[in-house]
Image 1: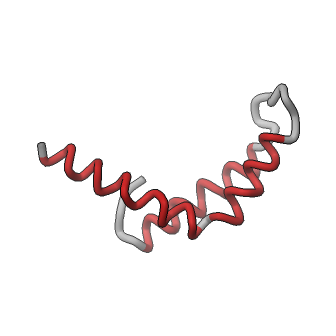
Image 2 (image 1 turned 30 degrees about the vertical axis):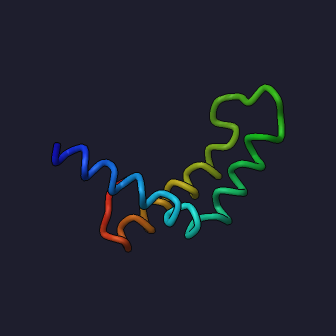
Amino acid sequence: MESVRKANTRLRNYPLLLTKCSDKASLYAKCVSRDINVQQKVCETEFKEFLYCMRKAAKELKTKL
């Protein structure tokens, strides 16, 4: 049950991580929602920036994603 508790703790941190990366998240969301038929790797740079921000924020909070 310890693993479930740790997973729940990590999930509770996601809203905080998303608020720290809200600018990158909105850029990625705009890119994805630009076209109805999203092709693979069209928004790759925006996604990589968002992912980097999330990882950096998680590291600052000393948590995992």
